[in-house]
Amino acid sequence: MRTFKVTRSSKTSQHDDLCDGCGHPDGAHLFNAATEYPSEGWVTCPEPGCDCYSTWSLDEVSKPAMDKIRHEYYQGLNSPGEPKDES
Image (cartoon, rainbow, N blue to C red):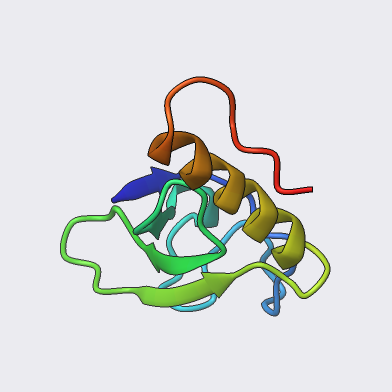
């Protein structure tokens, strides 16, 4: 599992620095993913006792680029040396 600290690009609350779900500082929340190059995952709050949970995913513009990077990464794992040329 991978964990990332990132900044959210859009907020729905009037307090941009607080989580909409639990009210704790938004910047402390952890973006989790199950793969090396994720396009979706889940968000958790690090505050003790907080059960805040949400999901995240890449937008439709970014997802194809991440899918390509992920494919190239796994191709490189399957064969030693240079990544395979698929052209």
